[in-house]
Image (cartoon, rainbow, N blue to C red; front, side, top):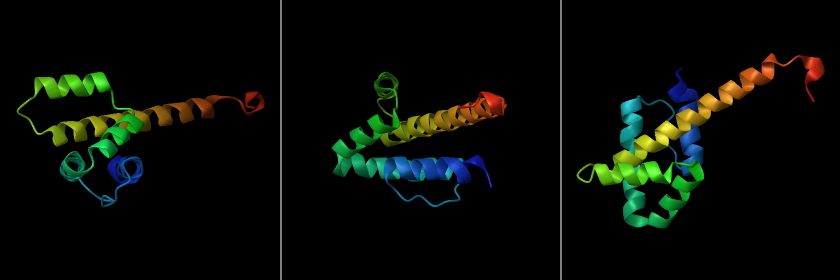
Length: 109
């Protein structure tokens, strides 16, 4: 199983309150995520804003990306930012856990 299956998809499912299949390629994940985001854009924009805020997607980066790519699919751009942010969080958690494991047991609280 890959990082996508074991950590990324469950993380996105939890953060977006959705149920994406457990085993997807990165391309398929992006497509399905963009489809879900497109639905939220059209039917529950407030929820989308809340979820993007909760996931901690950079508002500045999002605005800039949408401004620079006016002809592009906004749902796809948002999906890319969500995936990027979730991968950053996974990497940070791993690094934090690794650092925590490097501390001598006598020095841990």
